Length: 155
Image 1: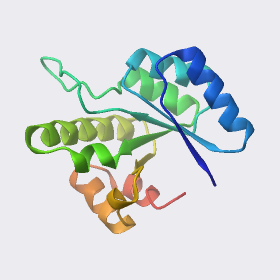
Image 2: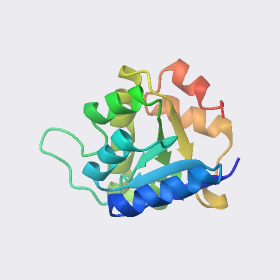
Image 3: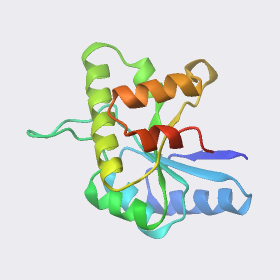
Image 4: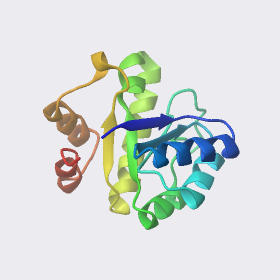
């Protein structure tokens, strides 16, 4: 199945791109760093995977700013959306930035486990792609429960 990765800054352009890709029978992956846009897309459009951007965010005082919260988790649960993790952000970051990205992924895993949401690791370029055993190991190290690591291999 073909994938359509859509990353837009405005809702109107994102909506038109999503509908165009869905009309062609593609699986729609929406990615954005704007939390309000992610919420609007989850509320009003049909996407298969939501992939919030984790790099370049400023954390809150008491928790990480991972771009995913309990409100988005409830919306994703209602519309049966899978939460995606961009492997390129993890692999391409170094040092302190990598630690921040991994802790944000771990926070998203806890939220998804609480709401029984599926997660998926995605890589847009071939050199960052990993096999299923590496992804399951990464998931279990970051705190994925067993049922979630088993669902990583499902397509």
